[in-house]
Amino acid sequence: MNGKSLRLAAWQPHARAVRAPEGMHDWLVTPGSLTARLVSSSAVFRVRRLHQRSATCLADEAQAIGLARPQRAWEREVLLECDGEPVVFAHTVVPMDCDATDWPLFSALGERSLGTTLFYDPLVRRGQLEFARLSADHPLVRRAHAALGKQGGTDTTIYYARRCVYRRRQGLLLVTEVFLPAVLSLGAAATMKNIL
Image (cartoon, rainbow, N blue to C red; front, side, top):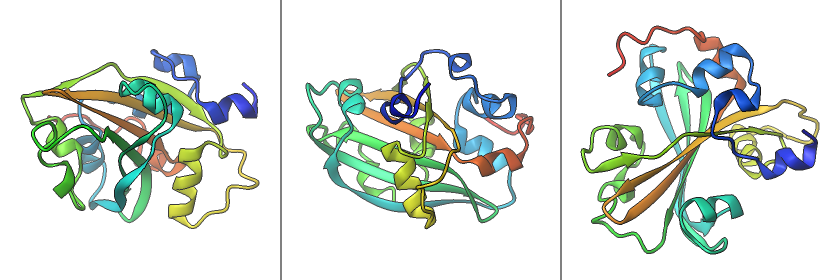
């Protein structure tokens, strides 16, 4: 893949298609709640909310949430931190026409994990995971770098991401998780026994 294609993110239905190293692949295919796995893999877990506001979604996000073209959507961005180290940049978009009956807790999440509501609400239906390789030029990686205070100009790291559409009543919600290199320090084979 060349740099341009990595900026555009070719989402794949199978994790093996993105050719992630084995340790990263293990994180990409985490079953159930990624938050629960991160909690079980660290002494102190924290959600650091970066912002929650309306913003224009990316073109591939528009398609995923049923919009004809990129337009304004509700956007939430957070860093998931384990023992003080950011390990995942999470980006969520929700169409503007969704209301409080579709996602009643979304506007009041604050520093709480979205996963804590998605996986324990019986009305939520999880779609299929999709996977991608992203370069430092991809808009979501640039946002992660900005949140970390890093300059992405000379970064040649390949970032791995996954995303999923969730449905509740008539509402759609797309969560994209960009795995930062530090996630590998948690151990690719971290025990799953405490994960619900």
